[in-house]
Image (cartoon, chains in turn yellow, orange):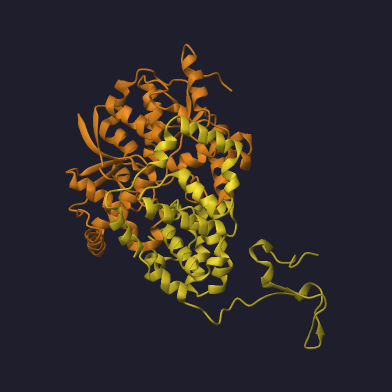
Length: 227
Length: 307
């Protein structure tokens, strides 16, 4: 029988929360069978507050303390429909209860927020949820960068690099640098991509993309952004 | 003659020039003089939000240039730029410490100061609310009757609803926006409402999270198509990245029902105003818009057969 099959709403409990033995004797009483399934204690004795401190002090995450855990954000969330572990209400709960380990376990999920602001729209208490999630993602980015998908790092670094160097962005250059950073250069030479590049070179968009130019005195603005 | 400043942004200057060109064509017809914001830079594209206060620097820089040019109101086509610029304008107005921080950053970069709060307007909202549907209706030469168009707003046109934006002031519904519906109806098109009108396309993670963005774009396209649309009308170049240029990824994620031609709504206005496909650069769109529009225009009564 599958682990924890006797639990009602089994899908809400993760595997590592369930303790189940073949034969279990406690205080001399054999409790094998149905009664040997137990959930690990959810009492959290050693909360770690760094994430909460970082988020509430950050400019974009300062509204986190207004949250009343109603879950309206998660009910409408775009990403929660696609990725079942993505749960903004729970992320905020973990931050405010010091569950550092849980947050780190979901480090590869939290950054997948698409920033569509449905959550902010739905929040009855005025929490800017989209930006709070962004702030939690930033904390993870600084704390456990290696637990996150390399594609996240590559995307983040590519946008920053293009933005700081040129002051302007364009999708073809972003895509080229992104794939280059991940050593997936071959994806630039697929038949569809070749067709698009050829079309863009012929209709003049290719040249526009290459010579997008920089804003005047861009280095001064870059210094403000970089330091 | 109405005059307004215009902020095209990076995308419209490069690969999404079709949106820029069609906006200018329509503006010329409607007698709107567009004054481009000089020496523009990127708006931050949402990628600098993690930097806190600094995320306001680039939008403020563009707004400061605008004020320096003697303009007080700017029309923005790209939804991401529109969101970033209104976010900064809003923070500038509502919070004194943010205001002084913005001025300090601008001073440090030796850029002109942001002397007052400019009003940031979305092109769609400007056309519907300032120019008016009656005026637009007068310019329609070829009514799009019979063309079944699914409007698609994206996310940052009307959200977040608790941030006071020009779209909200104009009376747009922040839960179920309808300005594009009204506009397309004025052009004579058959408007196809569908459940994914404001669903996000996953544009922020277009490169990094291919799986999610493929499924999200697939959902939008397939829902529009199954609601009976011939074509999808867009208003954001970032959405165009996923829905148009990378439509193949959506088809791989959800199947052939995601195959749907995509155009910018300004191109449809241009078409109704009697411009041809080349003037509006409809050929720039990757997902077969040219074919469906040629088919539509070739029919004597300008309509498409029922599928």
